[in-house]
Length: 61
Image (tube, rainbow, N blue to C red; front, top):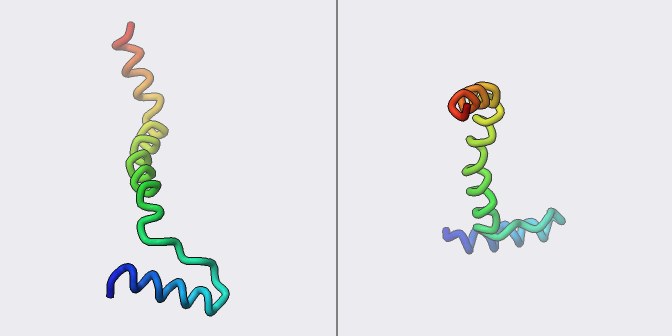
């Protein structure tokens, strides 16, 4: 079954059951990739903020 066929069936089922509309395939791909790209940087920066500040403060002086 192709993605298009699965999307059509899911949309029809949601319509019949009064559920929210199913998002089109690929509609969230860009946002997901951006979140995955940015997530490790944010996590590392928060965990090692003090260490990195001391490290770079010593080199800048």
